[in-house]
Image 1 (cartoon, helix red, strand yellow):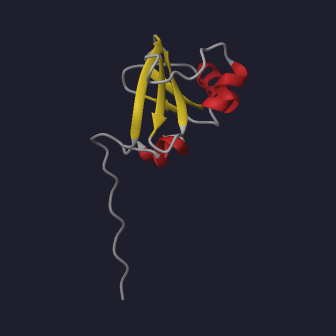
Image 2 (cartoon, one colour):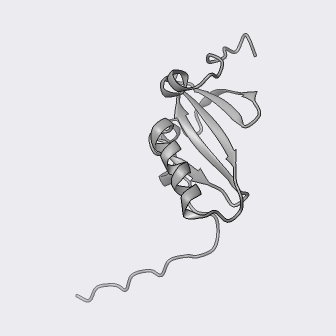
Length: 116
């Protein structure tokens, strides 16, 4: 039996975001119980399961040199388990597990719904 020809890639439209998300984001996709914005560019997410994660936005130039991309990758490796997501609006999102963020940054402790 002849093999089917591979499907050509689709070059238009929005790419699937799931492969670029942190595993905690994928696990809790659509199951967030609480969000807050404690600082500009910083988002806190708490899932129904109790998982907590922070997302940090970093603005960049529309075109970057390889040095800048490598610097962002190093930051992602150090603080975000290697996950960084680039958007078309020149924003980069680093997703950080709460334990890693609290150990390395001076952000407030995770908010509770009664304090926000």
